[in-house]
Image (cartoon, rainbow, N blue to C red):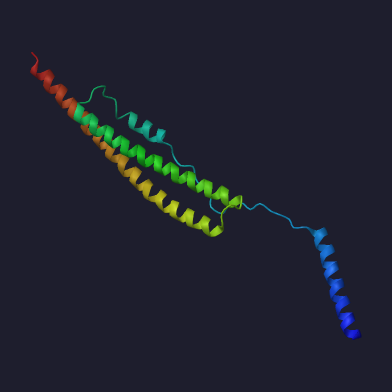
Length: 154
């Protein structure tokens, strides 16, 4: 009986000391930066400035102009989607730091958007090359047409 009483007092004392020490120690929260570093995504203006030199002709025939505009709209849509992917990645990082999403959800979001971002980057490069080719083709056709008209006029 006396052994049970000593065991109960020891357990109670250990609990009380742990409780008092735990209150003094307090948990420390440390902010940990994410392990993934995001590089800035290029803006549509970068592509627009590189294509502006190709658009030096003031007049393009209607079919050529339609083709150039269609290709430019495709490129713009791809750039916009790429920027949205980059935004989603930055938001996921922010939400993880705020502990509003779990690490598993963060990994799923980053995996999905990083894969889509890589696909879109390839498509943007291809679309920008197609647009440059279309503009050069339209410029060549316009030059040929203007030379033909100049040769026909006496």
